Length: 127
Image 1 (cartoon, rainbow, N blue to C red):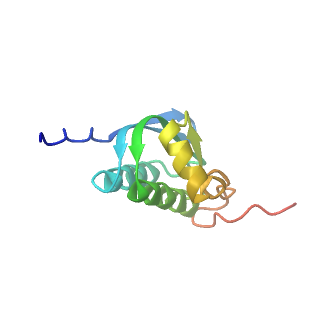
Image 2: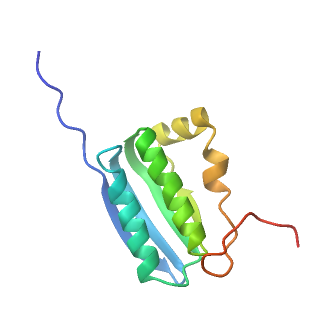
């Protein structure tokens, strides 16, 4: 029996999309071996760009995602909220869409806090 080839590694490509908006393109496998890479990249981008109000995660090229990958996405959402930014998932992959549906986390991820003062992100409240 031949061993399975290694899973493709996660590729993280950060960029400043437009003023006050950051984009992180994700590709490959988002799992226990690569989850820290995403969290670290998001944390660095938010720290290096104070005043960011939106963190866009382009998920179109994610080929697989496990529970640790989902945990990393939820951590990035928390970090963004603490920085006064909301996240937006873009270009959803079939595997990620299915995971979000099965776990019931889609609404938690896409209903990110409304930005306020840094560190004051919180649930949206009627005005």
